[in-house]
Image (cartoon, rainbow, N blue to C red; front, side):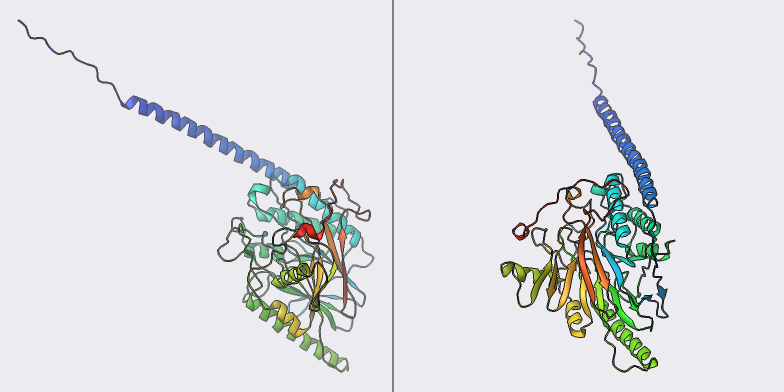
Length: 435
């Protein structure tokens, strides 16, 4: 009997399903990459188009018409000086927040409109921006490019023909933005902006933009000095600012202030002797920076603890606190700047920004500490719909070195917009809201 041979079975090719799954994965990956590439290309094109449109808008405003415009001159020590026997008007702007990306085009346009209207009506001799001209936060602006917003703002200032400078804020140069603080300092100082008075400042002092602008009378006597400080950005490993750990004015900046104040007083004394006048100079000064000092929080907390009433050290001059939580988001460490102001007795007023919904001014131990009215349409969710906090601060420096100042809201008849002014809610803020 013949042997029965075993049936031959066909072995299955186990590699076929794997290959199929691999092809599907590659196709899906390819589609995802194509979608991402398309999104990047579209947003890049829209960003370029939007930035160019806002740049053109910045160049479209009517230049200021001065009866007589003061022209600053550069001293031998490298400081800019305005010479006048009349009051000098300084306009403080803060937190302009021009995003420069595809997500912020409309709000950037609103910011340009607001700034142009206020500058045109006020006709200041000098504009000082206390930080955050640019806002390159990608999930709100749609770009990492911090130079785009700065370029648009600079174009507006040059179009209006007003002298201006700035102290850097935390958002002007983020850890993830394209251009460093040093690069942005070069942009402002070395760019084709003849009305920009920004100076990078001494290389051996921390930060960029530590500078002095003097006001002199026609006898060459300094009647007021304006000190600008870089208050830096974040500290204690909060590289992206998500923990609200803000930096302080550094020790060598305080030393820079003391040394330069002494030098300016010596310069004044020499000029007084040349004129045959006796006495020692005691220059009056103001200071400008972005992040408020710890003393601002100390003063506000004391005011709150006293039932929103003045204390022996604290007097409310005007304004309200619209921020919640800590209310004052100051530097998280101590510094000696306020104590140095007290010791030397020169600086009687400091102006800052950073907390967009705060617009109060306090007298604390004889020094006026003032939040500028913010411009911001972008950084705070829904802030473009609110109007009570938006405006500018007008500072008038008198020939005798004293100064007056007041806040101005943007939504008033004297600020006539060249383009349509948006409708907003003029929210009421009470002190209870700020707790």
